[in-house]
Structures are given as C-alpha cells and as structure tokens.
Image (cartoon, rainbow, N blue to C red):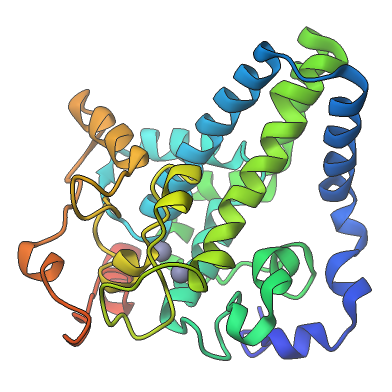
Length: 304
Ligand SMILES: [Zn+2]
Ligand SMILES: [Zn+2]
C-alpha cells in the first residue's frame, strides 16, 4: 500500500471519486433503503427496540474488538476466541480487522498531522467522517503495521471475505422478518453504527474538553461516549492507548469496558489492562507518557 497518500492528494481527485466510487454503492444503498423503510413502514416501539439492540451489539464489537483488541492489544485471548472476535467484528461491515487496525495504528502514529488518514484538520469534516473510508485511496491493508496479526492464516482468510457476513445478516433479516426485518434489524442499525463510529474520527477531534496534552487535537465528550459505548474519551485514549478502558474514572461511562470485564470474568479473555494511577492523574500541562503499546517493538515481538 502507498503510505505516502495524504488526505489532500486523495481529495485532489474530486468529490465524485472520493464519495461516489462504484464500491460505495452498498454503502449509499443501505442509507437509501433505511430511509425508505422508515418512510414506508413507520416507526414503532419494537422497531426502535430492534434497532437499538442491533446497534449496541455492533458497537460493542467495533470498539471492543477492532479497536481495543486488534489495534491496541489491550487484552489477551486464545487463538480460537481471537478468530471468533474477528468474525463477529467483521459482521459490522467495517472491512477486515487487519485493514481497520492498520489504518488505526497509523492514525495514532501521525495523529492530526498531514499523514493522519482521517484528521478533520487536514481533510475537512466529511473526509475524516467517511471520505477516507469509502474512497479508494486507503482500501489497501497496511500489512507492515499489522504484521503481528498477519501471521495468522485464518485471519488473512477472514480478511479477504469480510463482506460475506454482513450480506448474510442482511439476507437472514429479510428471510425472517421481511422488509420490516431488513429495515429495522439490519439496514438502519448498520447505517447508525457506521455514523456512530465515524463521529470518533470527525467530531471527537473537534468538540469536547481536553484533560491531557496528548500531542494532538483529541477531545473527551460524554455524549459521544454514550453513543459509541465508551469511545467518547479519545483524549484519554490518545494520552494512554494501552488501556482497555477509555473512561478513566468511574463517572466516565464506558459500556464496552464493562462488557470486556464480563468476558474476562468467564475466562474468554484475560490480562485486561487498566490505566496506571500516575498516568491517569497527569494533567494537561504534563508531557504525554511514551506509550509503547503498539510501537515497533511490540509488533516485532508478536510477529516473531
Ligand atoms: Zn485508538
Ligand atoms: Zn483518534
């Protein structure tokens, strides 16, 4: 993959190439389908319930797996459960876990600089929100950055066929629930989970407070933390990436972390990492800790 492409160079191709490539037809199609479904079928309590439940399940796997496991290694698990986690995460239609983690690691390395794949400062709001993801410039996987996971053939296979599971879920929703099922158990929660996640790249580097001098523009935002089940504390997270919890204090709601603690309690995952007190108690004026979690040494160690 060409790692020198910047937001500016990608956008120079024009808005059609960025926002309307052929590959984006399913993406935009689900938006139209969800909107038409709401219009044609109307909204009921059970529609809201299904949408909320399917949204929450997706969001847990996005934050707890793509982000806190494959990108940051904030907990450990067995090889078979690692596969299960990847399988479930990819059902949320944010491409392969290796693709996701590779871009995310690069985001941390170059956060809010020209080399950051989705910085609102360099690409603008819509670019950081979704342009970088639906456009074609970043569709390759940064294999070097994720070589610690590239060594698993089962993950590489899953990566190639990531789209099969979302399609299967859509088909199943239709077979069981007809157009109603397709709308409220699939299309609508899928679209909402995309935009819920994307706010972390767009809004959360713009809106909110800063507790730590994280060396970038990341901000904490309790509303986004609720919407994303705990990803609304990116200033905490950019300050210290190695923690499985992003709400550093009890009042910073982080539902994904509670879910991970439940998986730990039943023994499916372990070594769920917290945040050391001295790191948590640092202030805005303190220099950021050099967090070695996903740096080259760690990746080398796990790739060996
Ligand atoms: Zn991260
Ligand atoms: Zn970030």
